[in-house]
Length: 247
Picture 1 (cartoon, rainbow, N blue to C red):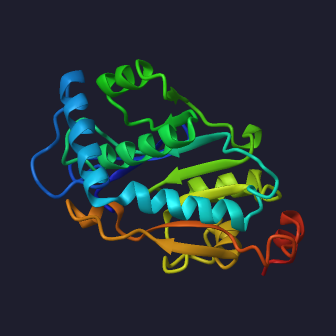
Picture 2 (cartoon, rainbow, N blue to C red; picture 1 turned 90 degrees about the vertical axis):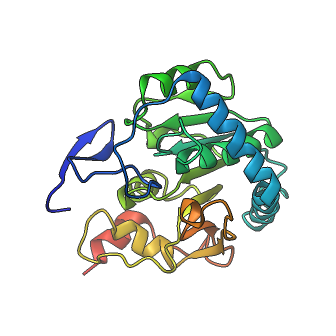
């Protein structure tokens, strides 16, 4: 990272410079932006791979298990929407973002919900594709303190501060499931303010690691579905109390 330049845009960190690469890409030539036609082809191929591997079936089963665990089914509450943060480029079949988007699109179709999606790195063609798809709503700057529940938050291979900021704004909201970095195994810096809420949250979750994805294992590497452990939902201290006593 010493040779890269990090800047802030749209609530995310963007890495720029000659060595910068978008998540999910392997070392090679610099990427070129895809067209709408190439995006359609990429999503079509990625969707076929997702269906062939059964990854969406696995995820739907685990989501249902999670809904029962956090009490949504007993309350007869339906999923309100999906929040997709930091998906990455999806204009080619070798982009991890194409497969992640295809997976979440299948989940959204199953539950008949809208996907609010944000990533400051989207190309003009990717933005046009999103705006032409009724299933997706492009959000320039997600307001975490105004989200409605129940919610499914997806942030795969994204900086830790994204989930950390979401948790800070929604500490008392437990009707949410996450798909993202596995915080049961990810090393977090105890002195980093972007990790402080995650440190507490990560120890209070049930984790279900994603199966190995055969087309490219790196696309969902170290990714899990996770949510508040049912035995601890009502035992966590208020966020301000936890912060004031943290050493």
